[in-house]
Length: 516
Image (tube, rainbow, N blue to C red; front, side, top):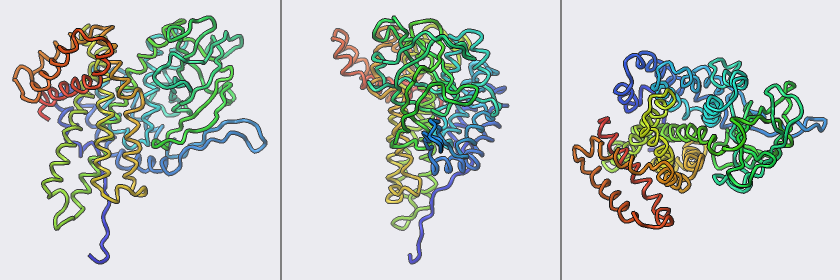
C-alpha cells in the first residue's frame, strides 16, 4: 500500500453508457424518429464526455463577473462570462436543444427527441440548461400570445440552430417579497411614449430580486400596468429586450450577482428596471395565466435536467466503484454496495420514465393530438413530476457524495458540486410544498382528481394486480376517503403525501409497462 493513490472516476460516451435511455427510446420512438434521433443522441453523448465537459469545467472554474463601471466611471453593468460558457451556448444552438421541439418534424415525438437531447446536454453544460429552459418557455408564450410582428422578430432567434443568431431568454418573476407568491409584484408599467424596434407599449419600473440568465438578449416578466387592480388579477405579461442597438442596457441597472450555494457558472443577478421599454403580450391582465405556459415548459426542463443529473452522479459512482478497493475487494463486489446502487438506479429509472411520459403529453398538446382528459393529466402531473425528480436528485446526489467517502467531500475532486448543484432542482420553478399545493389547485379548478383516479384504474399494473402498485393504490384511496368531507386545511396538510403517492403510482406502473 506504500505510494497508493486512488483513481478518480471517468466518463465515456454518455448515450452509449446509458442502457436505460437506449432501451426506453428504442421501445417508445417510432422507427422513422429513431433513424434520425438515435445517431444524433450518440453524437451528443460523445460531446458530453469530451469537448462539452472541458467547456463546463472552464465555466465552473471561471464564474461570471459583474463589472459595474468602465475605467472612466461610466455605468456599464457588464456581466463577463468565460469562453467555455460561450461555447456551451453555441453547442445548444448547433445541436437544436430548443429548435428540435419547434421544428415539430416528428409531431408529438419531437418533444421526446428534444428532451432526450437536453437530458444528455444538461449534465455537461455547467447548468446552461437553465437559460435554455426559459428560452423554450418564452418561445412557447410568444407562440401562443404574441402579435404576429413580435413573433416574426423574436421567435426565429429563440428557435434557430445558427449560433450567430441564437437568442436566449430570461424569466424575471421573483421580487423582494418572495418567489412563488407573485401577487405582491411591485413592478409598475407606465405608458411608453418613445420608439423601440419591438414596438414597446410600456416602460417598467421595479426591482427583480433573482434574474437568472441575465446575459440573455430578451426576458419575460410580470408587471402591473397603471390602473390595474392589486393582487394577481392585475398583473400582465411583458416582453423586453435587454440591450438597445448600441449594445447598452435598456434602462436596466444590475446591482450584483448572487452568491449561490451551487450553479456557480450561471449568471444570476439582482437588478432594477428604471423605465425599461417592454411590450405587453396577449393584452392586459391574465399575466399569471399566460406565464403558466412558460412554467409548464420550465418545470419539465427542471425534471429532465434533474434526471440527467442523477444519471451523471450514478455514472461517476459506478465507475469509481469498479476502481476503488476496500476490504480486499472492489466496492462493486460488496453485496451491500450493490444493493445501494440498485436502489439508486431504480429511483433514477422511475424518474426517467415519468419525465418522458409527461414530455409525450406536452408534445401531444402542442400539435393538437391530446384529449381533454390527457390535457388535465398534463396539468396535474407536471408539478408532481417536478417535485418528485427534484427530491430524487438531492437524495441521489447525497448518496453519491457518501459513496466517494472523504474524496466526495473535497472540492477539487468535483464531487461536492453534485450536491451543491443538485439542491437547486427542488427549489427552482416551485418548492415541494408550493408544487403540492399546485396539485390541489388542479384538483379543485380542473376537477383533476377523478381523471387521475380513472387513469390509475386503467393502468396495466392495476389490471395485473402488481403488489407494489395495489398497496399504494389502497393507501391513496384510504387517504382520499378520509379527506372526502374534510376542510381545505386538511387537504393542504396532506398535499405533500398525496403528491408523492401519485408519483409512486405513476412510476410503479410506467416501470412495469416499460420492463426497464
